[in-house]
Length: 83
Image (cartoon, rainbow, N blue to C red; front, side, top):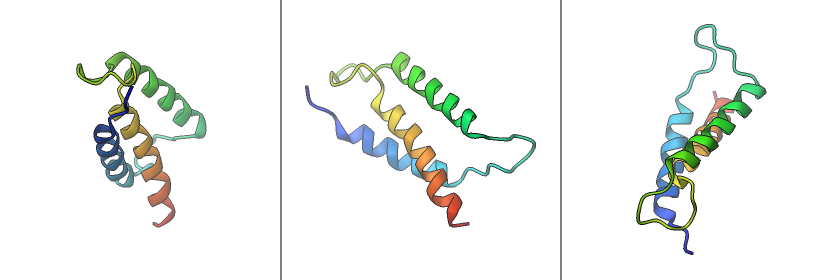
């Protein structure tokens, strides 16, 4: 079993870019810690249902989708402090 790092790195970079551009105070949407936990749990379920590419046999979840989701959260936390 060998972990494919290409999709994970690409998903993390793409998630960081997207996460840095998210504006939370736009409109009436209020994002609390509970909403981020729910989004993360739903993201894990979606990654499980997506599965990996057919020729990747490392994990039964989509590692690229999960890395992008983590990158969005990290990018939002990192770049929200700098503004």
